[in-house]
Length: 359
Image (cartoon, one colour):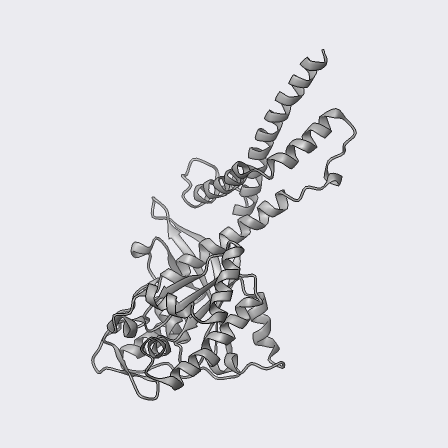
């Protein structure tokens, strides 16, 4: 099964560990989201649940040690119409000390390697600092946001080809001040580096999303003058939008794989087809024309979607032993069969017309 590496970039205090625990708590069962997450083992599940339980008792998780980079493996699953569980993919989530990221030096090869190898990157923006940016009432927090949060994240994203998203944590603070997502987006786009990153990604056809989340919900904690958050006694966490980042990451990753496969299809070289006959020349020219066409790209994408759905929501009519080993194998078979049928049907028509012309 494909395992994607998902990295969340964020400064100290942005809430990366709480974000992860709250995400798992929100997605531990399928519910209305259409999918759910399973932890790699019981130990991981217990640790994540304990982080969340400690929140209820008024304790934030301990600060991640600077030398520590922890890996959390999750399996994303769905239930089909018969309530059978089907794993779709796995992803590894990395947690680390925020200070290690913002103060990363040339010798920190471990974190750099993770950034380079990441299949998707989430930039976690501290909602408390966004609040200062929008209200323009705390210059130090604003400076911290630019230097320690946003610019280091943008720098890493600019050197990566992986899909990216920005996630605003502590959205309840901004919601309490009646700030809307469009208003915040417009303000961020006034920052030249942010605007340039979004523009470059849009030109590449890779969307940049701005996702508001709250790991604990409204009325659970209040901001303190030093930038920390104090838990309100007897309050209960009510996280919201925690399913959205993962819901966006998976389609982005699949779309990237689709584009890679399409690119492979469209790079047929002259050496791939032996041009020693009229038939092969016709085939070569036809392929070069048709593989540039938008309608074939649509067929490729539609075929992939159909195959994915048929593998996930398959009925019990086929023998299990005859099932493909993976979605990738099934996709390859169906894709090649679809293209073969289209190409050679068209080639046959062209050849028959050519024979009649020469008769």
